[in-house]
Amino acid sequence: MVQGDAFHPDLRGAARWLPRSPVNKRSLPVVRALSGLASRRVPRDVRVEPAGDITVRVYRPPTAPARSPGLLWIHGGGYVIGSAAQDDWLCRHFARELGIVVVSADYRLAPEHPFPVPLHDCHDALAWMARQPDIDAERIAIGGASAGGGLAAALALLAHERGEVRPVFQLLAYPMIDDRTVLRTDLDESHFRLWNNKANAFGWQSYTGLAPGSPSISGLAAPARYEDLSGLPPAWIGVGSLDLFHDEDLAYAKRLADSGIACETLVVDGAFHGFDEVFAKTGVAKGFRTAQVAALAAAL
Image (cartoon, rainbow, N blue to C red; front, top):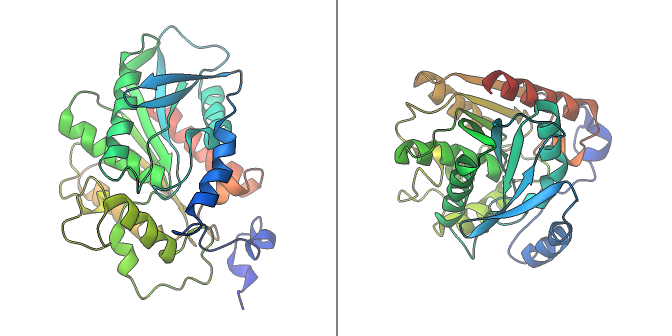
């Protein structure tokens, strides 16, 4: 019996009805078909542009300077589901609240397109942003949620390696960054929602093409494995206390800080994975977004 009082009061009533594992090999086509319905519609205030082998969705505020700061946003979905369209509302919120140009990458998904394809797609989107005359290439932040947060963290590493575009900030919402979490047997999963270790195993296997925990998995696929974190942009990491990624995210935040990288962390007590997207109108979700906007405002 799940103890309801473990959940944040704003989330307690609905938590009992939510699945713990939203996707597996059998359900993948169905979940993709349902999520794909949203991507067919392009709102009038959103522009779709080609960027390398993918497209990006562009959100501009009602009024913006000639050269605006920018945010590259990367959607979540365990590396296997989702699309840029699912975060139209969030990207529009960032653009409006901050007065910046927001670009969302519609990267290709695993297992059809495993690592490094999605990461390279995101780098193409970043390079596209840096070429736009209305975006200040020296004031671009990168961010994402869940697998999107993992890709954002990996993109910060790849951009540092290549040195072509240098993001000034990384905004990581409960990022999926360590395949080795799949190997843990000490986890109490009774309060996990929307992503458990079974789904985690499927996501990592699909993305890397290797068994989670394999010593040959690259640090650019699983950023928690990357050895040298020095020289990266400052970061903000937010995660719920009931999120599968809680421990790996705080461990990564500590490693960033130990490497001399400014890293602000926010742990939302009683919040599970994806709480802010599924229950966007709750007070706890609004508070999470307010913290993100404040972090971006300070950085940009």
